[in-house]
Image 1: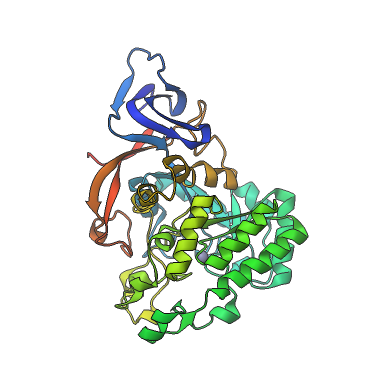
Image 2: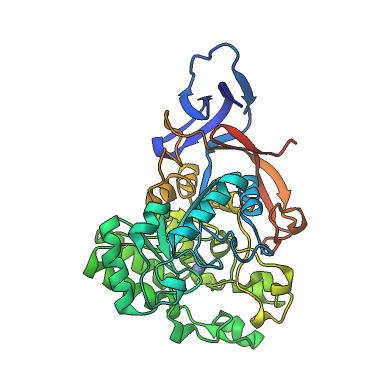
Length: 429
Ligand SMILES: [Zn+2]
Protein backbone atom coordinates (compact mmCIF):
# COMPACT_ATOMS: atom_id res chain seq x y z
CA UNK A 1 0.00 0.00 0.00
CA UNK A 2 1.34 3.42 -0.85
CA UNK A 3 0.00 6.78 0.15
CA UNK A 4 -1.94 7.17 3.38
CA UNK A 5 -3.18 4.30 5.56
CA UNK A 6 -5.22 4.74 8.72
CA UNK A 7 -5.31 1.98 11.33
CA UNK A 8 -8.53 2.92 13.03
CA UNK A 9 -9.92 2.49 16.51
CA UNK A 10 -7.51 -0.01 18.06
CA UNK A 11 -6.02 -0.11 21.54
CA UNK A 12 -2.65 1.46 20.75
CA UNK A 13 0.11 0.28 23.09
CA UNK A 14 3.49 1.89 22.49
CA UNK A 15 5.83 1.25 25.43
CA UNK A 16 8.53 3.55 24.03
CA UNK A 17 6.17 6.48 24.49
CA UNK A 18 4.28 5.20 27.52
CA UNK A 19 1.09 5.11 25.49
CA UNK A 20 -1.89 2.80 26.08
CA UNK A 21 -5.09 4.33 24.69
CA UNK A 22 -7.75 3.78 22.06
CA UNK A 23 -6.85 5.69 18.94
CA UNK A 24 -5.72 5.69 15.33
CA UNK A 25 -2.35 5.34 13.69
CA UNK A 26 -1.76 7.19 10.42
CA UNK A 27 0.90 5.93 8.03
CA UNK A 28 2.26 7.62 4.94
CA UNK A 29 4.41 5.73 2.45
CA UNK A 30 5.55 3.22 5.06
CA UNK A 31 6.32 5.79 7.77
CA UNK A 32 4.31 6.50 10.93
CA UNK A 33 2.97 10.04 10.61
CA UNK A 34 0.71 10.45 13.65
CA UNK A 35 -0.89 8.55 16.52
CA UNK A 36 -4.08 9.49 18.37
CA UNK A 37 -6.80 11.36 16.48
CA UNK A 38 -4.94 12.59 13.41
CA UNK A 39 -6.48 14.56 10.55
CA UNK A 40 -7.03 12.11 7.74
CA UNK A 41 -6.37 13.18 4.15
CA UNK A 42 -8.82 12.18 1.41
CA UNK A 43 -8.16 8.87 -0.32
CA UNK A 44 -6.71 7.25 2.80
CA UNK A 45 -6.95 3.45 3.00
CA UNK A 46 -8.57 2.36 6.28
CA UNK A 47 -7.72 -0.75 8.28
CA UNK A 48 -10.27 -1.34 11.03
CA UNK A 49 -8.63 -2.28 14.34
CA UNK A 50 -11.69 -2.25 16.59
CA UNK A 51 -11.14 -4.84 19.35
CA UNK A 52 -7.48 -5.27 18.41
CA UNK A 53 -4.27 -4.20 20.06
CA UNK A 54 -2.05 -2.11 17.78
CA UNK A 55 1.59 -2.26 18.83
CA UNK A 56 5.05 -1.84 17.32
CA UNK A 57 6.07 -4.97 15.42
CA UNK A 58 7.88 -7.37 17.70
CA UNK A 59 11.69 -7.51 17.68
CA UNK A 60 13.14 -10.96 18.36
CA UNK A 61 16.84 -10.66 19.11
CA UNK A 62 17.54 -14.40 19.17
CA UNK A 63 16.63 -16.33 16.03
CA UNK A 64 18.34 -19.06 14.01
CA UNK A 65 17.46 -18.68 10.34
CA UNK A 66 19.71 -21.61 9.27
CA UNK A 67 20.65 -20.05 5.93
CA UNK A 68 23.27 -20.37 4.53
CA UNK A 69 24.09 -24.03 5.01
CA UNK A 70 21.10 -25.68 6.66
CA UNK A 71 18.30 -24.83 4.25
CA UNK A 72 16.66 -28.21 4.94
CA UNK A 73 15.93 -26.93 8.47
CA UNK A 74 14.92 -23.38 7.56
CA UNK A 75 15.54 -20.63 5.04
CA UNK A 76 15.50 -16.87 5.26
CA UNK A 77 12.23 -16.94 3.30
CA UNK A 78 10.59 -19.53 5.59
CA UNK A 79 11.98 -18.10 8.82
CA UNK A 80 10.79 -14.58 8.03
CA UNK A 81 7.37 -15.98 7.06
CA UNK A 82 7.14 -17.61 10.51
CA UNK A 83 8.20 -14.28 12.03
CA UNK A 84 5.49 -12.36 10.16
CA UNK A 85 2.88 -14.91 11.27
CA UNK A 86 4.02 -14.31 14.86
CA UNK A 87 3.83 -10.52 14.63
CA UNK A 88 7.61 -10.26 14.58
CA UNK A 89 8.89 -7.57 12.20
CA UNK A 90 12.60 -7.73 12.99
CA UNK A 91 14.68 -10.84 13.67
CA UNK A 92 18.30 -10.79 14.77
CA UNK A 93 19.83 -13.98 13.37
CA UNK A 94 22.58 -15.93 15.04
CA UNK A 95 25.84 -16.62 13.19
CA UNK A 96 25.99 -20.43 13.53
CA UNK A 97 25.25 -20.99 9.86
CA UNK A 98 27.52 -22.82 7.39
CA UNK A 99 29.66 -20.91 6.67
CA UNK A 100 29.60 -19.07 9.98
CA UNK A 101 28.79 -15.36 9.84
CA UNK A 102 32.30 -14.34 10.82
CA UNK A 103 33.17 -12.40 7.69
CA UNK A 104 31.63 -9.31 6.03
CA UNK A 105 30.99 -11.32 2.85
CA UNK A 106 28.68 -13.69 4.76
CA UNK A 107 26.91 -10.78 6.46
CA UNK A 108 26.43 -9.25 3.02
CA UNK A 109 25.07 -12.52 1.65
CA UNK A 110 22.51 -12.79 4.47
CA UNK A 111 21.38 -9.19 4.04
CA UNK A 112 21.15 -9.54 0.27
CA UNK A 113 19.13 -12.75 0.58
CA UNK A 114 16.89 -11.12 3.20
CA UNK A 115 16.25 -8.22 0.88
CA UNK A 116 15.33 -10.54 -1.99
CA UNK A 117 13.42 -13.28 -0.18
CA UNK A 118 12.72 -12.14 3.38
CA UNK A 119 9.46 -10.47 4.36
CA UNK A 120 10.55 -8.98 7.69
CA UNK A 121 13.70 -7.09 8.68
CA UNK A 122 16.76 -9.27 9.24
CA UNK A 123 19.55 -7.99 11.48
CA UNK A 124 22.57 -10.31 11.44
CA UNK A 125 24.56 -11.08 14.57
CA UNK A 126 28.25 -11.68 13.84
CA UNK A 127 30.43 -14.30 15.46
CA UNK A 128 32.69 -13.32 18.36
CA UNK A 129 35.34 -15.80 17.21
CA UNK A 130 36.29 -17.06 13.77
CA UNK A 131 34.38 -20.22 12.91
CA UNK A 132 32.85 -20.11 16.43
CA UNK A 133 36.00 -21.97 17.40
CA UNK A 134 36.73 -19.92 20.50
CA UNK A 135 40.28 -19.07 19.48
CA UNK A 136 40.59 -15.93 17.40
CA UNK A 137 38.39 -12.81 17.51
CA UNK A 138 36.56 -11.72 14.37
CA UNK A 139 36.95 -8.27 12.83
CA UNK A 140 34.05 -6.70 14.71
CA UNK A 141 34.46 -3.26 13.17
CA UNK A 142 34.28 -4.61 9.63
CA UNK A 143 31.34 -6.85 10.52
CA UNK A 144 29.44 -3.92 11.99
CA UNK A 145 30.12 -1.85 8.91
CA UNK A 146 28.72 -4.77 6.86
CA UNK A 147 25.53 -4.68 8.94
CA UNK A 148 26.02 -6.85 12.04
CA UNK A 149 24.15 -5.49 15.06
CA UNK A 150 25.79 -7.55 17.85
CA UNK A 151 28.20 -10.44 18.40
CA UNK A 152 27.75 -13.94 19.75
CA UNK A 153 29.13 -17.47 19.42
CA UNK A 154 25.64 -18.69 20.36
CA UNK A 155 25.21 -22.42 20.39
CA UNK A 156 28.60 -22.39 22.07
CA UNK A 157 29.92 -20.30 24.93
CA UNK A 158 32.99 -18.10 24.70
CA UNK A 159 34.63 -20.37 27.23
CA UNK A 160 38.17 -19.00 27.42
CA UNK A 161 38.31 -16.20 30.02
CA UNK A 162 41.17 -14.35 28.36
CA UNK A 163 39.40 -14.39 25.03
CA UNK A 164 36.14 -13.13 26.57
CA UNK A 165 38.09 -10.34 28.24
CA UNK A 166 39.57 -9.34 24.88
CA UNK A 167 36.18 -9.56 23.16
CA UNK A 168 34.56 -7.25 25.74
CA UNK A 169 37.51 -4.90 25.57
CA UNK A 170 37.63 -4.80 21.78
CA UNK A 171 33.84 -4.41 21.46
CA UNK A 172 33.98 -1.10 23.38
CA UNK A 173 35.64 0.59 20.42
CA UNK A 174 32.40 -0.01 18.47
CA UNK A 175 29.89 0.09 21.32
CA UNK A 176 29.04 -3.47 20.26
CA UNK A 177 26.95 -5.83 22.38
CA UNK A 178 28.48 -9.20 23.26
CA UNK A 179 25.80 -11.90 23.67
CA UNK A 180 26.93 -14.92 25.64
CA UNK A 181 25.52 -18.44 25.50
CA UNK A 182 26.45 -18.86 29.17
CA UNK A 183 27.58 -22.39 29.82
CA UNK A 184 30.74 -23.64 31.51
CA UNK A 185 31.62 -26.60 29.25
CA UNK A 186 33.46 -28.58 31.90
CA UNK A 187 30.26 -28.61 33.97
CA UNK A 188 27.77 -29.15 31.16
CA UNK A 189 29.66 -31.83 29.23
CA UNK A 190 27.55 -34.92 28.58
CA UNK A 191 24.35 -33.46 30.05
CA UNK A 192 21.20 -33.55 27.99
CA UNK A 193 18.60 -32.19 30.41
CA UNK A 194 18.48 -30.19 33.65
CA UNK A 195 20.25 -31.99 36.49
CA UNK A 196 17.79 -32.66 39.26
CA UNK A 197 15.20 -35.04 40.62
CA UNK A 198 13.63 -35.62 37.23
CA UNK A 199 16.89 -36.37 35.41
CA UNK A 200 17.66 -38.95 38.09
CA UNK A 201 14.21 -40.48 37.74
CA UNK A 202 14.47 -40.61 33.94
CA UNK A 203 18.03 -41.87 34.03
CA UNK A 204 19.26 -39.09 31.76
CA UNK A 205 22.61 -37.35 32.28
CA UNK A 206 22.03 -33.94 33.85
CA UNK A 207 23.41 -30.49 33.19
CA UNK A 208 23.62 -28.53 36.44
CA UNK A 209 22.24 -25.02 36.93
CA UNK A 210 25.71 -24.01 38.05
CA UNK A 211 27.04 -24.51 34.50
CA UNK A 212 25.17 -21.33 33.60
CA UNK A 213 25.54 -19.27 36.76
CA UNK A 214 29.30 -19.91 37.04
CA UNK A 215 29.77 -18.53 33.52
CA UNK A 216 27.57 -15.48 34.15
CA UNK A 217 29.48 -14.76 37.39
CA UNK A 218 32.78 -14.95 35.54
CA UNK A 219 31.60 -12.77 32.70
CA UNK A 220 30.33 -10.08 35.06
CA UNK A 221 33.83 -9.92 36.59
CA UNK A 222 35.15 -9.39 33.08
CA UNK A 223 32.58 -6.64 32.46
CA UNK A 224 33.91 -4.92 35.61
CA UNK A 225 37.39 -5.19 34.18
CA UNK A 226 36.59 -3.96 30.68
CA UNK A 227 33.35 -1.96 30.68
CA UNK A 228 32.12 -3.90 27.63
CA UNK A 229 28.38 -4.28 26.97
CA UNK A 230 27.31 -7.79 27.91
CA UNK A 231 24.04 -9.66 27.39
CA UNK A 232 23.11 -13.13 28.63
CA UNK A 233 21.23 -15.12 26.00
CA UNK A 234 18.30 -17.32 27.09
CA UNK A 235 18.84 -16.99 30.84
CA UNK A 236 17.41 -20.05 32.57
CA UNK A 237 18.54 -20.38 36.20
CA UNK A 238 17.92 -18.53 39.46
CA UNK A 239 21.62 -18.02 40.18
CA UNK A 240 22.19 -16.26 36.87
CA UNK A 241 19.18 -13.97 37.39
CA UNK A 242 20.57 -13.02 40.80
CA UNK A 243 23.98 -12.28 39.32
CA UNK A 244 22.47 -10.07 36.60
CA UNK A 245 20.32 -8.28 39.21
CA UNK A 246 23.39 -7.46 41.30
CA UNK A 247 25.38 -6.30 38.29
CA UNK A 248 22.57 -4.03 37.09
CA UNK A 249 22.08 -2.62 40.58
CA UNK A 250 25.75 -1.60 40.43
CA UNK A 251 25.21 0.12 37.10
CA UNK A 252 27.21 -2.34 34.98
CA UNK A 253 26.23 -2.60 31.28
CA UNK A 254 24.71 -6.04 31.75
CA UNK A 255 21.36 -7.29 30.42
CA UNK A 256 19.64 -10.58 29.70
CA UNK A 257 16.81 -12.17 27.78
CA UNK A 258 14.51 -15.08 28.59
CA UNK A 259 12.80 -17.44 26.15
CA UNK A 260 9.07 -18.19 26.46
CA UNK A 261 9.74 -21.92 26.92
CA UNK A 262 11.94 -21.22 29.95
CA UNK A 263 9.44 -19.01 31.76
CA UNK A 264 6.42 -21.17 30.91
CA UNK A 265 7.69 -24.79 31.19
CA UNK A 266 9.88 -26.84 33.51
CA UNK A 267 11.87 -30.08 33.26
CA UNK A 268 8.56 -31.90 33.91
CA UNK A 269 8.01 -31.53 30.16
CA UNK A 270 10.87 -33.97 29.53
CA UNK A 271 8.99 -36.81 31.23
CA UNK A 272 7.97 -38.98 28.28
CA UNK A 273 11.29 -38.18 26.55
CA UNK A 274 9.72 -35.76 24.07
CA UNK A 275 12.65 -34.42 22.04
CA UNK A 276 10.69 -31.22 21.36
CA UNK A 277 11.36 -30.48 25.03
CA UNK A 278 15.12 -30.63 24.44
CA UNK A 279 17.00 -27.40 24.11
CA UNK A 280 20.12 -25.64 25.32
CA UNK A 281 19.95 -24.44 28.03
CA UNK A 282 17.46 -27.13 29.08
CA UNK A 283 14.07 -26.62 30.70
CA UNK A 284 14.84 -26.04 34.37
CA UNK A 285 13.32 -26.64 37.80
CA UNK A 286 10.18 -25.05 39.21
CA UNK A 287 12.39 -22.87 41.44
CA UNK A 288 14.35 -21.64 38.44
CA UNK A 289 11.18 -20.90 36.52
CA UNK A 290 9.85 -18.92 39.49
CA UNK A 291 13.08 -16.92 39.58
CA UNK A 292 12.65 -16.11 35.88
CA UNK A 293 9.11 -14.88 36.51
CA UNK A 294 10.33 -12.76 39.40
CA UNK A 295 13.17 -11.45 37.22
CA UNK A 296 10.64 -10.36 34.62
CA UNK A 297 8.38 -8.79 37.25
CA UNK A 298 11.27 -6.88 38.86
CA UNK A 299 12.70 -5.66 35.56
CA UNK A 300 15.95 -7.62 35.90
CA UNK A 301 15.11 -9.51 32.72
CA UNK A 302 14.27 -6.80 30.19
CA UNK A 303 13.96 -8.81 26.99
CA UNK A 304 11.85 -11.75 25.81
CA UNK A 305 13.49 -13.56 22.85
CA UNK A 306 12.60 -16.91 21.36
CA UNK A 307 15.86 -18.71 20.55
CA UNK A 308 13.82 -19.89 17.54
CA UNK A 309 15.81 -22.97 16.47
CA UNK A 310 14.26 -24.94 13.59
CA UNK A 311 15.27 -28.59 13.21
CA UNK A 312 14.22 -31.15 10.62
CA UNK A 313 12.37 -34.15 12.00
CA UNK A 314 15.34 -36.49 11.39
CA UNK A 315 17.35 -34.45 13.90
CA UNK A 316 14.59 -34.82 16.48
CA UNK A 317 13.23 -38.32 15.84
CA UNK A 318 16.07 -40.03 17.69
CA UNK A 319 16.90 -41.05 21.24
CA UNK A 320 16.52 -38.08 23.62
CA UNK A 321 20.20 -37.50 24.30
CA UNK A 322 21.08 -37.67 20.63
CA UNK A 323 18.38 -35.25 19.46
CA UNK A 324 19.35 -31.77 18.31
CA UNK A 325 18.83 -28.95 20.79
CA UNK A 326 16.20 -26.32 20.13
CA UNK A 327 12.60 -25.44 19.44
CA UNK A 328 10.82 -23.04 17.11
CA UNK A 329 9.22 -20.09 18.84
CA UNK A 330 8.43 -17.18 16.54
CA UNK A 331 4.75 -18.06 16.08
CA UNK A 332 4.04 -18.69 19.77
CA UNK A 333 6.08 -15.87 21.31
CA UNK A 334 3.23 -13.39 21.59
CA UNK A 335 0.42 -15.58 23.03
CA UNK A 336 2.73 -17.42 25.44
CA UNK A 337 4.19 -14.11 26.64
CA UNK A 338 0.69 -12.69 27.12
CA UNK A 339 0.19 -15.40 29.76
CA UNK A 340 2.53 -13.24 31.87
CA UNK A 341 0.03 -10.40 31.66
CA UNK A 342 -2.94 -12.62 32.48
CA UNK A 343 -1.06 -14.17 35.40
CA UNK A 344 -0.25 -10.72 36.80
CA UNK A 345 3.52 -11.09 36.35
CA UNK A 346 3.87 -8.12 33.99
CA UNK A 347 1.74 -5.24 32.78
CA UNK A 348 0.74 -5.00 29.13
CA UNK A 349 3.19 -2.18 28.73
CA UNK A 350 6.15 -4.01 30.29
CA UNK A 351 5.42 -7.25 28.46
CA UNK A 352 5.29 -5.53 25.08
CA UNK A 353 8.32 -3.40 25.94
CA UNK A 354 10.34 -6.61 26.41
CA UNK A 355 9.49 -7.63 22.84
CA UNK A 356 9.78 -4.25 21.11
CA UNK A 357 11.74 -1.21 22.19
CA UNK A 358 13.93 -2.97 24.77
CA UNK A 359 15.63 -5.33 22.29
CA UNK A 360 15.61 -2.65 19.57
CA UNK A 361 17.60 -0.30 21.80
CA UNK A 362 20.04 -2.99 22.94
CA UNK A 363 20.81 -3.77 19.30
CA UNK A 364 20.86 -0.10 18.33
CA UNK A 365 18.40 -0.71 15.50
CA UNK A 366 18.02 2.32 13.30
CA UNK A 367 14.98 4.16 11.95
CA UNK A 368 12.94 3.86 15.11
CA UNK A 369 12.29 0.12 15.16
CA UNK A 370 10.23 -1.01 18.14
CA UNK A 371 8.30 2.25 18.56
CA UNK A 372 5.31 4.05 17.06
CA UNK A 373 6.96 7.46 17.31
CA UNK A 374 6.06 9.68 14.33
CA UNK A 375 8.83 9.42 11.76
CA UNK A 376 9.54 5.76 12.55
CA UNK A 377 9.25 3.03 9.96
CA UNK A 378 5.71 1.61 10.06
CA UNK A 379 6.48 -1.84 11.47
CA UNK A 380 3.34 -2.88 13.36
CA UNK A 381 1.40 -5.82 14.70
CA UNK A 382 -2.39 -5.90 15.07
CA UNK A 383 -3.58 -8.69 17.33
CA UNK A 384 -6.76 -9.87 18.97
CA UNK A 385 -5.81 -10.17 22.64
CA UNK A 386 -8.79 -12.39 23.48
CA UNK A 387 -8.87 -14.85 20.58
CA UNK A 388 -8.29 -18.35 21.93
CA UNK A 389 -6.59 -21.04 19.85
CA UNK A 390 -4.70 -24.27 20.23
CA UNK A 391 -1.12 -24.48 18.98
CA UNK A 392 -0.90 -27.06 16.22
CA UNK A 393 2.63 -27.89 15.03
CA UNK A 394 1.33 -28.90 11.61
CA UNK A 395 -0.14 -25.44 11.04
CA UNK A 396 3.01 -23.46 11.78
CA UNK A 397 4.32 -21.46 8.82
CA UNK A 398 8.05 -22.18 9.17
CA UNK A 399 9.81 -25.08 7.44
CA UNK A 400 10.43 -27.02 10.68
CA UNK A 401 7.67 -27.78 13.19
CA UNK A 402 9.61 -28.58 16.37
CA UNK A 403 7.50 -26.66 18.86
CA UNK A 404 7.31 -27.52 22.56
CA UNK A 405 3.86 -25.90 22.71
CA UNK A 406 1.93 -28.32 20.49
CA UNK A 407 -1.57 -28.71 21.95
CA UNK A 408 -1.26 -25.72 24.30
CA UNK A 409 -4.36 -23.54 24.64
CA UNK A 410 -3.33 -19.93 24.21
CA UNK A 411 -4.99 -16.56 23.88
CA UNK A 412 -3.90 -13.74 21.63
CA UNK A 413 -3.83 -14.06 17.87
CA UNK A 414 -1.94 -12.02 15.32
CA UNK A 415 -4.38 -10.57 12.77
CA UNK A 416 -2.05 -8.43 10.67
CA UNK A 417 1.66 -7.75 10.54
CA UNK A 418 3.01 -4.71 8.68
CA UNK A 419 6.61 -4.05 7.69
CA UNK A 420 7.30 -0.54 6.42
CA UNK A 421 3.55 -0.11 5.98
CA UNK A 422 3.15 -3.21 3.84
CA UNK A 423 0.95 -6.08 5.08
CA UNK A 424 3.25 -9.14 5.24
CA UNK A 425 0.83 -11.36 7.16
CA UNK A 426 -2.95 -11.29 7.21
CA UNK A 427 -4.80 -13.85 9.31
CA UNK A 428 -8.03 -13.12 7.44
CA UNK A 429 -6.63 -14.22 4.10
ZN1 LIG B 1 22.27 -20.38 22.83
